[in-house]
Image: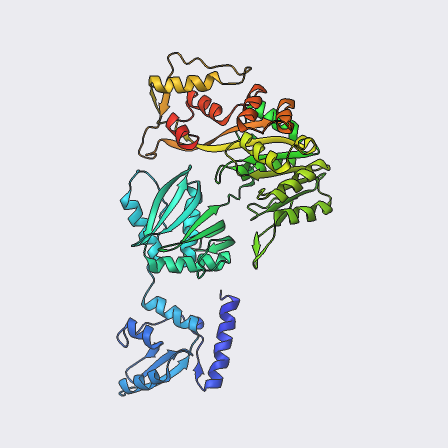
Length: 535
């Protein structure tokens, strides 16, 4: 069945033929199509932009397009002067159909990426070969699809002196996938820039967002939803694409790995009609997933929920989501401005994608004081450090402090593969380190017995050369107790992160390091992994 676009093209070509004084042939109706490979070579057909449609001993009929040069018609007539040569106009698509018959495109096989060795040059060569054969949109779709298959969080495109390296971040660690030439890189970057509304010609960092469906050469459809971060380097523009997972079931409090105590605290706090809940940690620590999971649990017909995000990472039914670009035509559009605007829309719950400045922090706190539950993220190394920074912003203001309900700090570490992990007896130094951490646990937490302790390290298998499988969250939850409030509002004392943390521990908070140590003792991760992520 011929699609509408092809019908329109054929009709347009027929009108053009009448204007130019040529006969017209609709090649979509010519079946089967006969190939005359002894008349012109494939390279001549491509370069001259004409194709033999019919030929016998006395006559040759050529199909030409509107881009076939007039000089070509004269030279072909002279070349075949022993035959009667005639020309008809055909559409560009019709010409392409004949080209694909004379020179069939090589079938591209999109091999799945399997990381089975820590250094796999054959994999790099294979994926590089695939990328060098396909068009730009297919390159982008293939990389995104494979990254999702491998549960990768980011795709890194990095320019080097001789070529361009492509890496996936899987379970927090980067793995090289392919190397491509600069010629192919420029084609890929042009497609990314066009889809993400960024420029390839500016010498500054940029942000963008791609949300589209791409149909690949093998007819598979890939949903590309990524956030772009670019930065110019001495060799070209480097790009990081942060992948957004579109599976709504992923955003659930039940999947956050909260302990019974922590889950009870979260449920109690978010059931209140007002207050500030903040999730802190570095980029890639799962902050947005935690906030989305809380939002998803609160989303019902009785509540109005509005989010302010840069960009909107996942669209939820029943939630009003406001995208914010922090730089529009050179004018700063601050989160605080948008936040003040949406407060007039009578929301019950507000999510601010990130507190980036003092104005946004104060506005969020004011909103939480006036009958709104406010959820947001913040960049800080720990819950106590986040509270110290907030105290610097709000000063010794008991009213603002009373609005803060919960600060969750978190990191992601790799989980040991239970099928391959190897048991071993830790060194005296490792036991001493763990004992010191365990001794600092809150009073009500039961201390594990470290006598005869066995720990685990990653093993190796054919399918898993790294010994890890997935990630787990280590976190701390700081609820604002009376003792913590007193420290923040004490006019006679400088607010100290250590003082806040000690007070929180006495109130029952597990620090991230303590939570991590318990997970090491339980055999969920390795002590080296904790050193890598937490220090």
